[in-house]
Image (cartoon, rainbow, N blue to C red; front, side):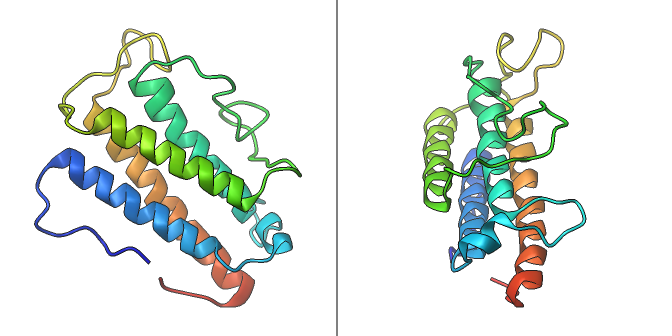
Length: 169
């Protein structure tokens, strides 16, 4: 398990990146050791599975950084749900834990390459996810992505406890 970032880290961008790495590692550790059936089954009334949550995180980061902050046109920005932003998360039979973790790490590398050294006050361009009137700063985007990871790591913690009693790190 990765350690929480140093309390001495002051650079906002590096702090966000360090916490994103920390929560990605937390998510990965919560998924480690689960059987294929546990990865694909739900234990919660909302109906999502651990693998669906992982796929959501992959697409969420992609939506905010690649489609949002860089305004890159991406194919299937809502690929974690067939019905768009309000659809239920879904995962295909051919999607695997290893494949989705590789996508998660590729997204992490993309995020790091795009934001390292950037001014946190940089406003996202129009043309990707954002129009001309709703463009957030890089700092806001990174904070939003970070809270998504933290919130969903907590959800996964509960799911894992329900699956096999594992708690904590």
